[in-house]
Amino acid sequence: MKLLSSLILVLLFFCLFGCSVRQADLTAITTRNVKLDSTNLNALSGKRIEGEDSKFVFLFIPFGLPHIEDAVDDALDKGNGDLMLDAVIYKKGWWFLVGQNVITVKGTVVNTLEATTH
Image 1 (cartoon, rainbow, N blue to C red):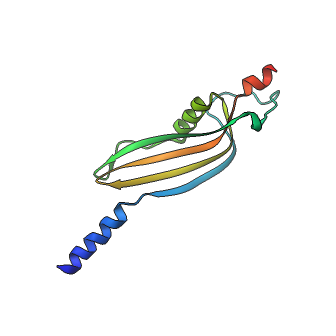
Image 2: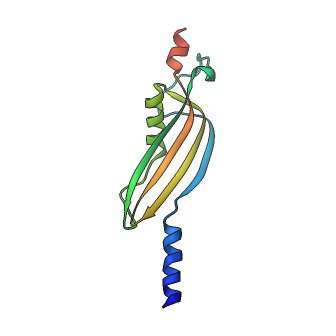
Image 3: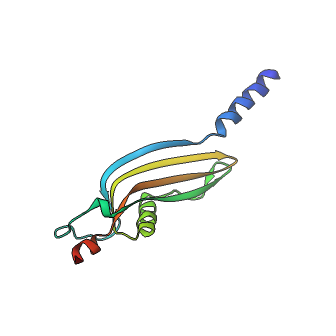
């Protein structure tokens, strides 16, 4: 009985922690139509922004899967831009009866439309 309770305690211990994995490093990423032929990109004018998409998990049943596209859209909306430079994509998750799966994108958001109008 003591072995069983110890095993349950160890399993609960591991279930309480989440995991974060670096998925990709990208020079540029966007979900919008961007015309780059006459654009002068200035990464210094952009802001470092983080966007994410997450989905709920209940009793080991995921209620959808997070998407990179939605995380990028979130970051572009927050940064009021249309292109993300030097982007890093992370996948995270945690659970214990309930939980969450998350995709996070961090990068410098620039607006190419402003660059072409100057």
